[in-house]
Structure formats: C-alpha cells, structure tokens
Image (cartoon, rainbow, N blue to C red; front, side, top):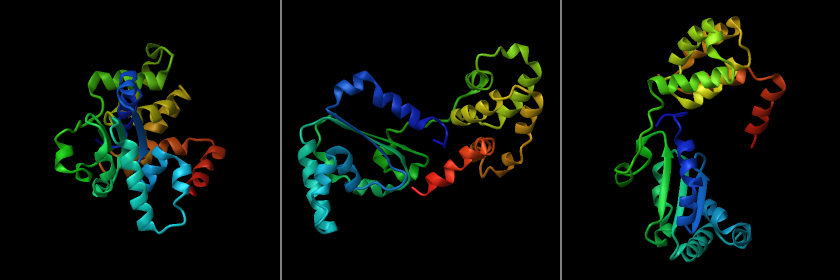
Length: 233
C-alpha cells in the first residue's frame, strides 16, 4: 500500500499481539528501507558478541560463517521475521538460513510496491487503501479537534472537511495535519493550512510528502534543526 496507509502500524499490532508472542520462539523486526543482508539479520538475532568475532575474516567467509550460525540458531524454532518498508526484491536471495526454521515460521513484509516481492508472496498480500468515508472523517475529526467539541466550531468543521479531502484517506496524513490544526483552533490558521502551496507538490494523488512538509514547516525552528542533524546518521 501507499506511504502513510498504516502498513507498519498494522504489522506492529500483529507483532505485539500476546498470542503471536506466545506462538513463536523468536521474533525479529528489521527496518529494511536502507539495506537488508545476512550481517544485519545476524546482528539482530545473535547479538554483537557473535558478529564481533568475525570482524577479522574476509567478507565472503564472514557471510558463510554467520549463515551457518543462523541456521543452527533457527533450526527447529518457529520464528517471526518482519521486514518493514522493503524497497528491493534482492532480499529474496539473501535469506537461505531462515529456511531452516520450524514449520509455522512466518515472514511479514511491508512495502509500497508489489514489484519488490516475488509471485509466491504476492498471492498472500493484504493491500491497504487507507480509511474510507465516515471512518476517515471520524478519525480526522479526532486528530483535529482532540477533546474539543467540533459542534462548537462550525466554520472549522467546514474548512476541515476541505482539508480532509486532500489527505486521500491516509491515516498518517490525518495525524500530522490534524495535529497542526488542533494546535490552533482559529479560522485563519486553518485556512492557511488549506491554502498552502505545499499541496501542489504532490507527485501523485496519494503522495504523503505534502502533509509531511506541512508538519515540518510548522515546527519550531529549534526542532527543525533536529532533522538535518539526524540526517547525518
């Protein structure tokens, strides 16, 4: 599904469910948007003491060594592996070790594009399209008004309805923009959000970036500096 549609949130609910926790011997969550490989998997599952032992050997020997340890570690265990925000189909060639897991083991993948998973995985896909109709309106209203009674702000409700149409049912966009609106329940502030030129920067109808940029633009300057600082890492 599209960015901001709730893929990661849905996967987090499943990952943290008590029944899931009890069923699997091992659970691993990896943010896969940058790079996913045996080294990262091993680092998460086995921990630094094991991965540090192989720093002195060649890259090829290192991968073979870690893959062997992973096979032993996962052998006979039911495990859950979540790869969040996968952007490349290359991941399918990198996990021979996890095939040694016990029957019932699962891999959950979140991705924006179908092309990053193979045909077998696509047969088991769940496509998230965002919230629809009244569900989205109720959610956005809660984000925009918080504990305030919307019926006391009829003009803001009208403006908010126009803003909501720009968000295309995306829950993350509703949270970001709704939070901006809730910060100042003033008609002028809400109209500024509605008329912002940033809405015109959307590359497609479901682009989350205009909402994100609005959120950034309205941050206090001392918090804006956190973004370029964190970008270094």
